Length: 342
Ligand code: SF4
Image 1 (cartoon, rainbow, N blue to C red):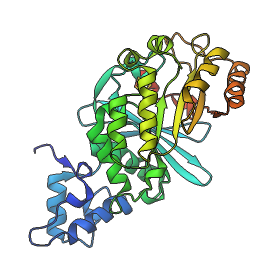
Image 2: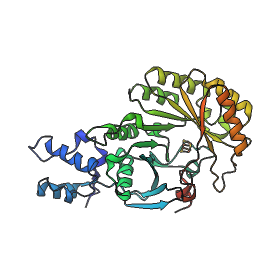
Image 3: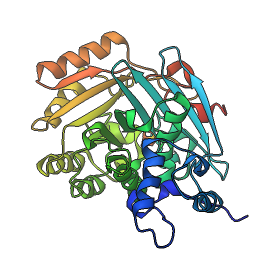
Image 4: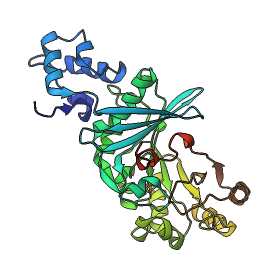
């Protein structure tokens, strides 16, 4: 039997319908997929039986061969998904009291190769498709026992650099915000990037009020180049210029991700430089204690150093908070489950 295509790879408006029945059946199918979270056409009882069988023969709904679930003491849940070609990617479910948040991956591994990142150490496997990105949300909802429409926040901050897989990541976001899809507000979707100026400018033209999270991790090119290979091609000044354009085009707040690495980027003078660099942007800085993994060669800055760094930013009028990554005991930061060969 030939490999079946995945229905989730299609925009909701382009879902199939039986010959001669217009888009009515396609809308019913979208409802089953995205509102009800159906994973088998056999349960779609208001669709004609013959067409249900045909759908099942020609299309798959779940893009994953296998979904493994790892619980954490902080109540987050990590998922390791095995794709039909045997490659693996990850997502994290973070249940908060008043909202359900899922962090998804856009790739298997990552080509950016940031030296402090477990995913970067894996190297690049491949891009995920639109359906493989959206499918992570549907799988998590299914395994956690809630309807996909109960999701409140999505973060594209797992494995991969989403803006290097631009079309699939944007396609997935379009399915998320489509009323015939998950119907999520774009304001509740955060897209994380290592800082690719031309892609940020392109994203600004999409006029989607997403939250952009930029992994800056250092205020100067010399330090950035020590830890982020893409910094050789893209200087800090160009990234900041692109962020000004993003905000001028109606883009929303930008969050600056800053992993605190002892002796690398945590000097108070670097906090002063960061505040100067961000002047004029509407930003929130997330200071992230480094989550150690075997072989990384880095240590986290101490809590006292992080607090002092935060005080410099606050005194300069830059909003910031210290963010601990969730799921540390269930495989830690993205990529660690795969690195462990879980
Ligand atoms: S920090 Fe992000 S961009 Fe850098 S290697 Fe890790 S996943 Fe890729």
